[in-house]
Image 1 (cartoon, rainbow, N blue to C red):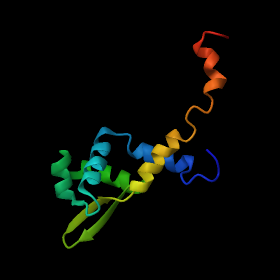
Image 2: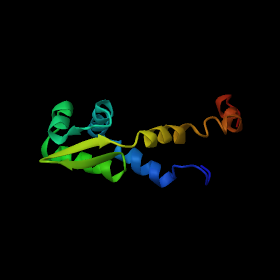
Image 3: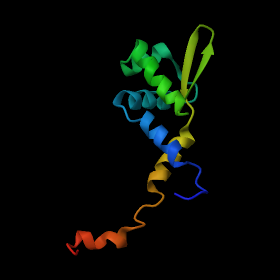
Length: 113
């Protein structure tokens, strides 16, 4: 990765770590599906089948990674995915150097040593 990339290795690792749980990935997916208006913690719990302190823990992880934002509206806490561009950058991060060393290591596939 070069210095001009928007996503640093550290940022990417933090985001991938946050998404590295089946439940957190489910939470993120539900929030992406809900759009920019997001959903309340209660709605999110119903949508994902996760509730209480477990849901709070997962949302905290995603918030710390910059993928989710929480806003208090009246008596509700609304969660929304805010990092659509970050998710796109994570994909680009993985694919940015696709096949760059393919010819360098192609001999391994042919059985050459």
